[in-house]
Image (cartoon, rainbow, N blue to C red; front, side, top):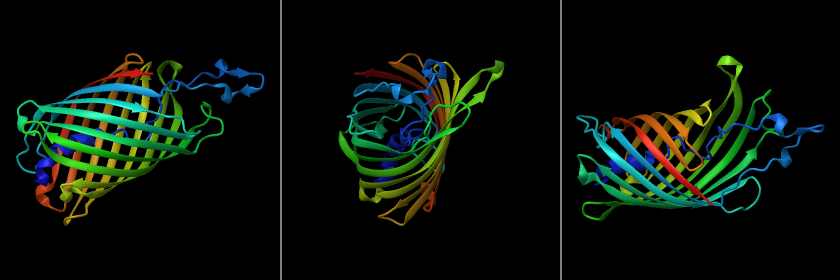
Length: 303
């Protein structure tokens, strides 16, 4: 039964790629002349927009080269991945970001409807700034931010054809991430903002069926780069060691992904992404390679 759940689990895992911990900001930073006076930069006077509540929709239409995650004779298909979600971010205290969220998944395969599923996920994200530069956004030097983050979530997947629960999971994670913010010279004498990041994340995933319970150790390295106004690209590389706790199995997964994002306005964005994953399992039959690529539309309403 467990291997039959893994196509669905890969899609849910895939949503986390490129989103490990607090995302790096590639928004254009304010120019010094906008907030400088005779005393120099007055950063406490800068106000950041705060969003207490938001509702969102993510719609992806993806090509998947290996929906069954098999080593021999992989099956390819197109899948419609629809996510509806809402989040609430209460103010607790400075430097601690708290987000309570809920998501509903709808996933439909073009030619393999037997694998269609719906899903629900709810959880709490916490991110605490450990180290930040004393004078941020100075163009003559690189600034870095260290963030400790954690998450607790519950997820449930249901097979659509027969409305049967196929998977449940409680995921507890903790991670440490470092973000840099710098500028690069560009054509025509202009500058572009670049945001490299790297870190480590540990997941304890208690699952039903129990054979899928595992502990994950993930190291990641990535970068976001502004290409032009409201358009940026992100690259992410991951190495993950998965230790299945209720059977004699351990996997090592290498993942490379790239995304090109166009922020149309504060309510909508378009995204073209590609992902390659190579999984080496101690059980050879469960090793696989998979390529996933396609467009994505994100809509947000903020309050």
